[in-house]
Each structure stands twice: as C-alpha cells, then as structure tokens.
Length: 350
Ligand SMILES: *[C@@H]1O[C@H](CO)[C@@H](O)[C@H](O)[C@H]1NC(C)=O
Ligand SMILES: *[C@@H]1O[C@H](CO)[C@@H](O)[C@H](O)[C@H]1NC(C)=O
Image (cartoon, rainbow, N blue to C red; front, side):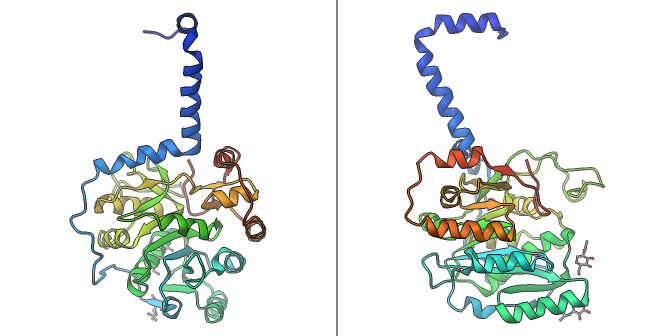
C-alpha cells in the first residue's frame, strides 16, 4: 500500500482514539534511539551471529609480532589496577598528556577508581623530540614505547603494542580501556559500571555498516588486499573502548604478521570478529562526540571527545565540584542531543 498523505490522514482519523498510544510509542522509540539505549539493546543480539570462542583463558605466551619495547613502566603496575587505561598519544602532544596527568589520569590503583593511566608512543622522527620524550618518561614513568616510527599510519601498531604490553606486564588488570589524548574519561563512574560486568567484553560506541574507503587519497584508505568485504564488521570507536583481560588475549591471538589496516579501531573490530567476540554498545561512551560543557554531562557520560587541555582541566574541576550534585535522570538525552561530533586524527566519524 502506498502511504500517500490522503491515506495517512484517513488512517489518523479512523484511529483517532489511539493517538495518545501512538504518540507514546513514537516518543519511547525516539527517546531510546537518541539516547543510545535502543542500540544497547540491539547490540546485545549481535553475539547470536558470532561463533563462540572455544576457550576463554588468555594465552600464557603472547606471540604478537611487534618491535621491541624501549620504555616499559613495569613499576607503575606493581600493584595492578582494576582498570588499565592506555592512551595512544603523539610525541608533540605533551600538553595533552600533562592535562590528563593532572586530571582524570591522576587516579591510581590506591584510589576508589583503582585505575592506572599510561601513554603509548613510538619513536619520534627528530632527535630533539626523542630526547624530550625520554626526559618526560624518566620524570613520570608512565610511557610505554616500542621501537617503530611514530606516525598516524602506524596507529594500529601502537594499539597492538599497548594491548600486548598490558597483557604481558600488567596481567592483574581486569579491564583495559584504549583511548586517545583528547578524550575526557570519567574514571570513577566507568570503573563503578565495570565492576558490575563480567565475562568477555568489548564495549564502546558501536559503528555498524561502515563501508571501507577505497580512494587511495583518503586518510582512511584501505586496500582490497587488506580488507575485501563491502562492510567492516561492527566495531567500537577508537576514542574509547573497553576490553576485558580475556577478550584482549583472544583478540591478540588473531594478530597476523601484517601489513595491517591502518585504522586501529576498525582493525580491532576485525580481530574481535575473528576471535568470536561481539562488540557491545554502551550509550554512556560518547564516541567521537564532545558532550556539552556541563557538570551533569561529565558526571553522566563515561567519555567526551575533542577536549583541549584547558577544557579537560575545566571538566575535571566541574566534576569535582559537582561530586554530590543532583542531575536529572533524563540528562543523558540532553548530553547526547546537544553534543557535537568532533573529528580527530585517529577516528572515523559517522
Ligand atoms: C630500534 O630500531 C632501529 C632501526 O629500526 C635500530 O637501529 C635500533 O638498534 C633499535 N633499537 C633497539 C633498542 O632495539
Ligand atoms: C611504521 O613503523 C615502521 C617501523 O619503524 C617504519 O618502517 C614505517 O615507515 C612506519 N610507517 C609509517 C607509515 O610511518
């Protein structure tokens, strides 16, 4: 039946009594989809379509083909955190790393969040930058570095390096969060949420049905040799995704000798699918969205992307001041509705 305005009007007239019900259904669906709860529900069904991994214990010996570590802050993990946060960062982003160190990254295994934040970098091109990074690493002891060229195109290698280090040198960490240096993380609330979870987990802002870029000039170009499908498997935005320890182990077992797709979040999604781990949408992880600059949004959402060092400081102060502050229950809808999408070097935006 063709739904022309006339038939629609007739339909509405006949069902006049049911308008309130219709309105209610439409509002509920609208609320659920804008807030992301509908996606949370739908992503829960994804695992039906994934084969189940045959074993869940993480591998004893990791055989991941990555260059040797140059910096390995093992002492930082002497008392393992509940949540280990791996921030992929670029050598020139010292200001962003400092902002994270002074704000949400300042929490340790000994605080209520029981989190630990480390940065993952490779080798800068200039000798000056190399020296500066070495100095920074000696001062803060929070930098993981492996011997390869630090570049945007090596981002997948950076992520795999961080995850490998975590499983090798920080085995006690129950969960891993991979994020970027322009993301604000509500460390305390995220760990509180994760304490209620269990099993194999790969969670974040889910991207469905993304088509690979086949134009070689595009920054996110991917050749048919690297990935031949017309769509990527569902994957979590690289601005912040959580892996349980076991899930990370199974994902790393799938890493081939390369070359690898350059976009790291897509690559992890491909590996997860090969490992039989379905990604799960978590509405409070904002993906490439920057939430409105308000204390209730920083309290409600687990992440916010596209933050400047100054914005990060302000968000942290707002969060601390609003510690016992009451926020209306529908605030997440507001945060998502009025958030803006921000693109950065590391992530695709949809
Ligand atoms: C790092 O890699 C460079 C070139 O690839 C090599 O010359 C150097 O010896 C390596 N350093 C270490 C400590 O492995
Ligand atoms: C990635 O790192 C490797 C190892 O250092 C280097 O040979 C390669 O040029 C880097 N790739 C890019 C695109 O920078």
